[in-house]
Length: 236
Image (cartoon, rainbow, N blue to C red):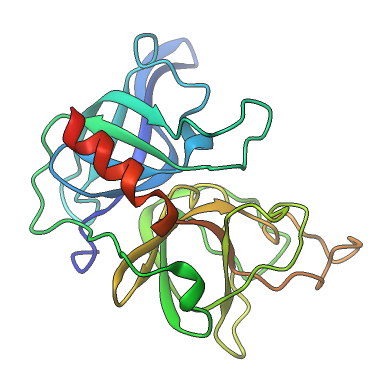
């Protein structure tokens, strides 16, 4: 969407073979937020197993018109992220070739714990589902969801890590799915979070978890990591 040019898609370049024909494709896998011409914010689990020396990765933007791609040159996960805990400190930066946008995302400096009860917008390139029977995936269309911010209860995903949860507006049953990971939680003060948790996407009506957690998303709050983000961006 032109309203949110900084909300972008991450892609992996690879070859596929169909009926004996080898073809180069760009496989989308996560969402991200462009902070400046050369720095983009995403979830660390999106790029944990990626080696840019072996598999070319790209940021895809201008998805409403002729798509443009820029190379990902460097991946930096938060240094305090435990190797055996994929959801702890699940935030990362990627350095890219220059991405020219009308404007870039602004990081909020507001303490996320003070925002409970306020409105926000979720942005991502996954498919936002309202039916459990559909298979999740990644789309080329930016999805936008209006939500309310709330404190996370103890869930299988949050486990009391630094996290902020959102719920859909009253009467709406929507939630995030894979492909939305790494995307934006946008508040009037700026970007306040990065999507990392998907609870309801795989939830089936016969599941014991059905209806137990009504979160639209679980996200890593940005405010505790501002010093780290600024340090990395200014260092390189």
